[in-house]
Image (cartoon, rainbow, N blue to C red):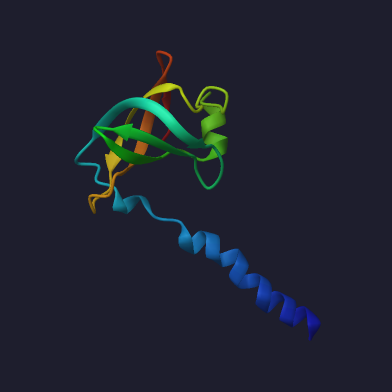
Amino acid sequence: MRQIFAAAVALPLLILPAAAHHGWGSYDASKPLTISATIEEVTIGNPHGDLMLTYNGEMWHVTLAPLSRMNARGATADIVKQGAAITVYGYPKRDGAKEMRAEWIEIGGKRYPLR
């Protein structure tokens, strides 16, 4: 009985992160966007990395690739860091939120594909 109770408690905890993650269909690939700015905040991790940039006076959230892909492509935490000048190419949210999914980033004259 104890094992059944433990499984019943653990299962929702395992499902919640997957349920909370968004799909790529919420981004509009027909309206590519390029933003050049300075990285104000950065999180490199799973399920994906995230940046915060100020563009045209508004704060933008940029969704990056997962940690393993970022590292494999050379976009490591010592390169993608707060204060770095960055150019991001990607797709904005369909709902008009100041958010985009990055297809590639460029830092220090080097381009890093993320998809």
